[in-house]
Length: 129
Image (cartoon, rainbow, N blue to C red):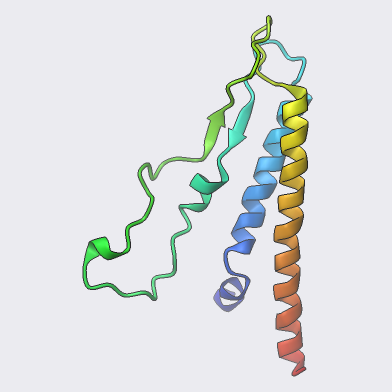
């Protein structure tokens, strides 16, 4: 199974994170009219930073390959600051959430496409094509 994980690369993990982000955006959209609901966002870069490069690199000093790991317990979740405040304390802005969801869906599709190409290449290699 480790061989398959190496073949798929970071795209498998990226697909899971992108899926989690789309679920979060959908939850924000669903709670558009909920009083005091705080819109949340998932910072893709900070979540993917936990997936460090493979250990097959070697260095002569510990500081040669620094990681952007300022907060190792960071789960990437952030509260979104609204452009215009709501009277009922809700920070969801429907147009912003819909635009972000559309972009997230396109990113998800692109990652899925990368995975499909990798799987197709593996199938061809196994068939001997």
